Length: 254
Ligand code: MN
Image (cartoon, rainbow, N blue to C red; front, side, top):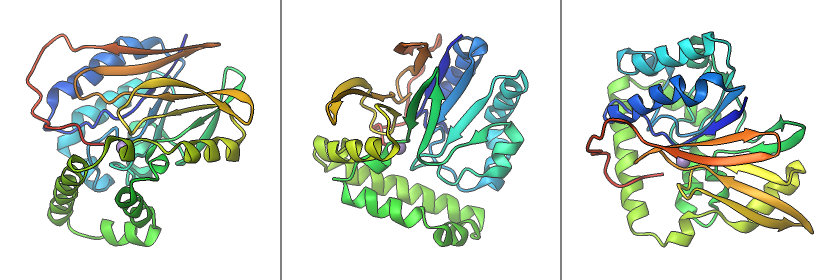
């Protein structure tokens, strides 16, 4: 029995092959899991639970609902794309929402979970966006708009994000090591799991004289990725879809 962590699937009705890959993942890798943790940007964008419970996401919602009904707990943290995922949707599909910084007990060890966008502090534009959208007043204002307007705003935000990232230095989009140390110290952990940067790796580091580890999950743009944890064993595994389809999702956007 393993505990599984995934992030950055960026699911959208425009990329049906990744939705299929997720279904395959639920049926195979995840079917015997102890628990499944989703660490943000599960959806490419989210304009509120009203729209998310509509027909476009019905297959994903139904698959999650069936999976959680089988008794395997699923924990969900929003990312910078799907931070508006709320209780209505979570209750409908049976997942438990997590706070942006959550410490879990993983086989006796305290481990910190984040999406990861709070760590890219050198990217000022991303941080300004994060500060804006994390404000409950901004969220209430946003969610009160009609769905067609929200769809247009989401589309606009994605285009701007693409433009912003294409002109940026690679290092700026990666985590800031001071921010990593600060958040690990704040929670008193020596292991951190996050996604967001699409730079999968198991980083060994020293934190105040102690060995520590930062595990970065991969995106699902070209293939699937899962962190499988058993007691004292951490493995980042990749898997492909059986069917090969042309992904027209464009450049991978965080
Ligand atoms: Mn992200």
